[in-house]
Image (cartoon, rainbow, N blue to C red; front, side):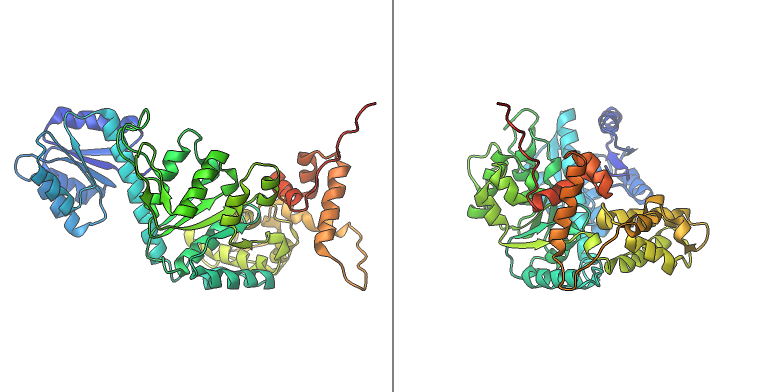
Length: 461
């Protein structure tokens, strides 16, 4: 929710107080003004996120206020309210850049929905502007820090496929940087100047998931008091990133398959399909092939999504990148928290390289932020690192490994270690994960990768 206030401009004091009460009820901050001139002063002083104004007011009208503010602040959204609706007013409001137009008598649900929808759209516009501003820096492939051969190879593949407009499936554990890679693909594509819309499929509420993805028409279900564009419609001409796509329900998988095949969406309550031109990037930390075999994911959808599959390796499999990333994060937090000259010692970097990083790059970033904030000097040493990182080297050193001259298969060793850890703890996933110093989600991901299943219980005779 926005932290900037919402400006309410209306010469009717009771109407102002009513709108203010409704919005504060939903947790918004508000500021009010009794006419257009006062509204203009309040805008300049308070920098609101949204302006709600009556159209007909003495002196400066709502349309005049809209024109003056939009002249210097084109991205500020406006909602106009009026009891005297005319076609001319509506056309003029849209020409000047009004976002919505509500008729009196006002209804609480209608005002709240309009505000929520307008701010969501503003957030989307702001996010895409930020992406464009940082296109030459934060989200280009050359700006993704990678020194390991495996990661450099992945970036080369991603850069090659970026301009081909094909569907891409990014796989890998949580925290490996799949969303960052998706943004880089978008920013290097021919759609770079169009929207990039992220959808967390695992967080979609089941009863509203279809509406969130494809939108709805007013009156199509209880609470649908206005038309709403879904994520696909908002991403039209651009890219939609379906994060955790393996969490979609089977009915939604059918609808997503139709979008990919027909390039059109069915809005809830709409009689006709709507054509969309969207590139789909998807990501998952689950093994979709195993989900297909278990009947939890449609095989035809899997093949549609995995035209190009890029498996982003966990941090423990690209240890050469750890010092590079750690030093980058130190610089980042040194700037953010105004800690001049902050650096990290070689010994501390060596310790970081010996840790298993079950939470991957995201965990490394979190650790560096914590030690940066708590650092007793401008040098981060071994003693500042968390206990689990400091103690990881001694645990590894206690394992005796004898490597054969003819070479080894690393994946087979990993599979064997996982199997032994699971058997050691009677296939209790939580205990095995703690033993291996990885998260349970990471353990499940690796089990799915190697198709490790507990033995079937013996049948009694």
